[in-house]
Every structure is written in structure tokens, then in C-alpha cells.
Image: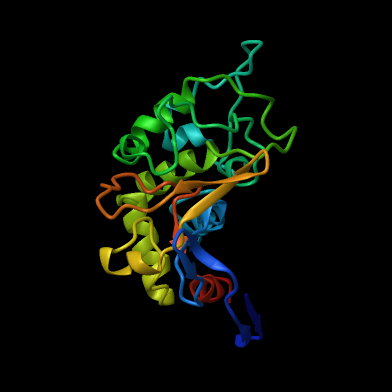
Length: 229
């Protein structure tokens, strides 16, 4: 728990465990998989480029990624998607990422590249006419991440690290966890039908080629507070 007001931390405490077997206490500096809290960071990366005049919110996605020029709904009608719609979950791009081996922190998935993933996204029909509905999408941030790469000339992970994480002093945040920090990284659990099982235990041997723009970051409450402030 971290409570901050006007830039001052009022309360910072840890509860529970970061691993159940053996039981290890959760600490205030425990590194956690922050999942979809990655999406605001992806949006921030995009807005940095907007501020620099290298990206327009109301420009068509196909201007930056030509493979999206043929997007159409299931009735065959073509529709343009804008950058703003990508960021606001109104693009019509389906919620899931269309890859059979897509499993968070699966080594095969992590070794893919953003261009490979967005080609598969561009090949699918839109779920609805862009701008007419709001549907949460995990696929749209991958498209946004690739646009960041095209507009910046850098990999998405490198851009986020150099333009956001390092300037803010977010020293425990990244798409990979350094081997020296593995001991304070929380194991990820999930509950299914009342049963808690281990979902993911970060492995420093993973080769993280693709920084996942929809949910790949690990961080701490302290670092998130720095980002929010």
C-alpha cells in the first residue's frame, strides 16, 4: 500500500506474501508484474511523440503502418482506424492477440517481434465500426507500440526505458527483471474455480525480445508513484 498526497508519501506498507511455498513476506520493494498497468505507459510513450510533433492523434493508423489500410468489418466494409481510437479502446480491433502460442511470458512469445504480431492483427476483421463502441482491447496496444517504433526509430522497449523509466528514476521498472533482483520479485498466482495456482514465476533466462505494450512491465508501488506524480 502506498498513499501519496501532493508528492509526499503518507503511508507505505506491505502485507501478505510474495510467494506461498515457501512463504516469503511481501516487502515494500517487492517487484510485481503490473500487467495492464503497462497500457498507461504505452499511452505516455505515444503522447511524448505527439508533443514532439512526430505523431498525430487523429491520423490514420495506416499512415504509419500501411498493412492496416485494408481494415474492414465482417460485412466487408472498409474503415480507417485513428491513433486516438487505438488509445481509447474504440478502434474495433479485436480484444485478443491472434497468436496460438500467446501466453504471458512464454519464451516463444517473448522472442517474437512487434512487426510479426501486428501483421497478424491487421489480417483480422474489425469487431465494430471504429468510434462507435468502447471495447477493451489487448491487441490495440501492440499496434500503438509498433507506431512508437516507426515514429521514433527505436524499439518500443528502448523508447520506454530512455524516455520514461530512466528520466523518472523508476529503477525497478522494466520489461525484464535483472537477475540480481529476482529474489524480491513476486510470484504471480491466479484463482480458478476457487483454487489458487501458480501462473508465472519470472525466469531471468528468458530472452525478452518483445516488450509487451499491453502488459509486460514489472514494477513496484514506489516506481508507480513516481510515474503518477
